[in-house]
Image (tube, rainbow, N blue to C red; front, side, top):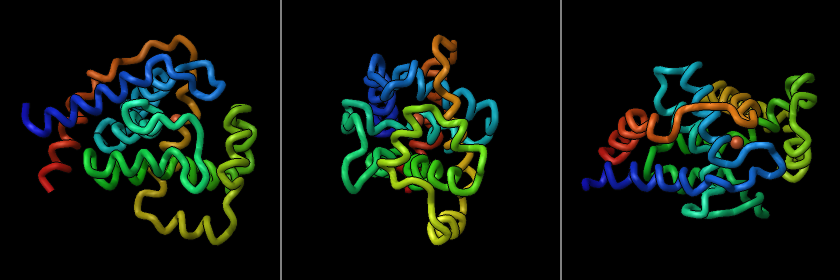
Length: 188
Ligand SMILES: [Fe+2]
């Protein structure tokens, strides 16, 4: 098996290891959440393999095979942990998008008056631990990033991927996108 194939296999196994893992108090497990997010991403941005993979893997730090951290630790949230693992495997853009799903929530709370009310109770509780709404300085530095709109979209998808019993494609379905993104990253 070549390095690309090996890396894809490692990512697929990391996803599989999220099966049965509780997603804080949400009504789906971590794997179902990841797969629902990827399915929505594919509907909305079928051409953007990196975005689809970022949606699939944004919570990968929860996977026992990666770090297995159940909650946000002091000084680092699970998006940042994910980004460190993702960068050498799927590249900087995917890693950045994954890392932004926590800041993007803080951005949305600060800029969209209706957004806070749409959050689940769990998500509202974790918001406090994550630093609450962004201030003006944080908002402008967030919006200076090239892909900030995609980061916001990933976050909105993250909030939707919590439907109990929804049937969506398995991880294997994303092998073509994974393959494109991993081979591009390893060729750099
Ligand atoms: Fe998530």
